[in-house]
Amino acid sequence: MKTFNDLEFKQDMLRGLNAARIKFDNGYGASVVIGPYTYGGRDGLYELAVLDSNDDLTYETPVTSDVEGYLSEDDVTRLLEQIQNL
Figure 1 (cartoon, rainbow, N blue to C red):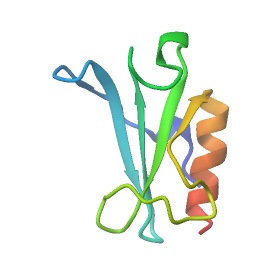
Figure 2 (figure 1 turned 90 degrees about the vertical axis):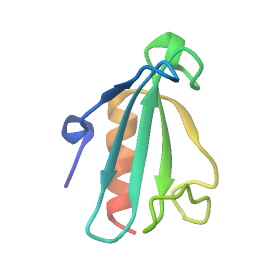
Figure 3 (figure 1 turned 90 degrees about the horizontal axis):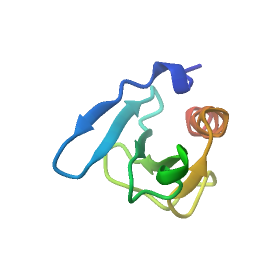
């Protein structure tokens, strides 16, 4: 099971973000970002969106119907586990 520690963040200078994407065997994935304009970024918290098999944002899963913000590392891990179990 992949967790927050498996994420490889890269700095996106253009948007002022640190961003990571991860893909799972079930075809889903996640985009996790942190930056001054993300939900919770100013407080050191993360934002996560579920990705479909085409790496597009999807709001059609039981995990979430929106972008999730204000997430701790543990919160991100919990959501990553839910996505892997879809």
